[in-house]
Image (cartoon, rainbow, N blue to C red):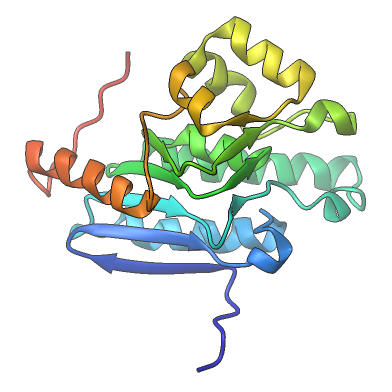
Length: 212
């Protein structure tokens, strides 16, 4: 059977949609095309009344690697602003979704990919998960909402330190800081168990969100 070459693969089963980033040989970059594909996918999935939870995950040892740096280097001021705005819209769509959204971080989760995970209601991680906002090493800063969401999740001081140092943190530290709520292998089982708990508490056609 030929390998699936799509950047994003979506499966729906038992009220749970799984959106999988599917370019591990490229480290699952959130390129312009991938963001457009994700936008199209979300338009379909979030409007489905038979879907009450959405799980985002990656392939092999990569959740996603954020924006494609080579693509970024070719942007001018206008296209860079448009690219940033697109990512913000797509991730806000995730944050505003009627469904419970879960990031099942199966490995490396870098830059814009961490922004995506932060837009989800819940984050769970595999034991080999690695998180970072590496922008400081590249002379850039994330433009997809991470600067606003990360302090709300782990606190202002910890967030500033991670942005300024660009250091990586493992799943153990992510759990201790509250960046993720659970660590387990395989991570998809952990994510599905979390979704099942949520769906058991809330009717499948009404999935309320609580914002503090």
